[in-house]
Length: 286
Image 1 (spheres, one colour):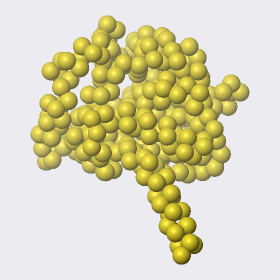
Image 2: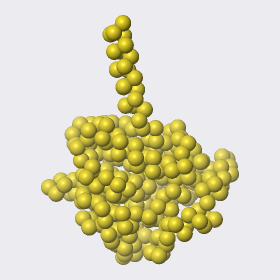
Image 3: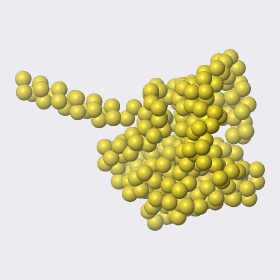
Image 4: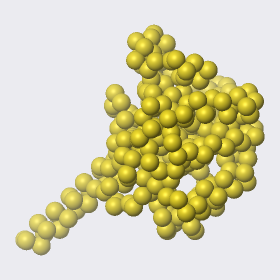
């Protein structure tokens, strides 16, 4: 009887560990220093497939897909991204990771900055791929998050309802056309569109508003680890350098590189992308 009770307690403890994060799905591949890979808005962790293939023999890769994106079960929460942030931090602590590195694309880059600024001593050097501390401040440095929250344009319920109103018919076709502004290859654009189609509409609306009304420009001053920022071409290379230098002004230990690419740098310029990762990860500074 005692053995049975002990077995049940062990099983319950195991279930508790695995149930502590509901805001993301995670796949672990490889061995070595841990690297947490966070995809962008509406995307599956499969966006990192080629990157995973390249680095799985060097690092232990933790590939995330956020709840509600690309067919993953959504969570019911007023602050989805904040929940993701908190549960990634808990995931790192539960698994006793030592200074895991982060690679985040777009919204994932924003999340990378949020994680680092919230727990500056928990993470190692990290990479932000074409993401900003405050996306709403593009070309408008005076933008104010609290003011935006009161704006009808950023009313969460309205934005969610707009996403829900999008018809299923033609969704992938229309989204593929839109994605061609963010990636060169039409096959990639269609894949990204299909991930969006499989995403929960409430999650799409809620998370875009949450990110757009969260300003990390001052918060990044808390970050201790080195950060590599990869930017895409935003009009011109000079315009990209100016925008990223302005938004990341408070981040002390940073390197900004501009790729000759659209938003999905890892798809448009893979060899350049890997070269930057290799050089940055191989630096001695942690």
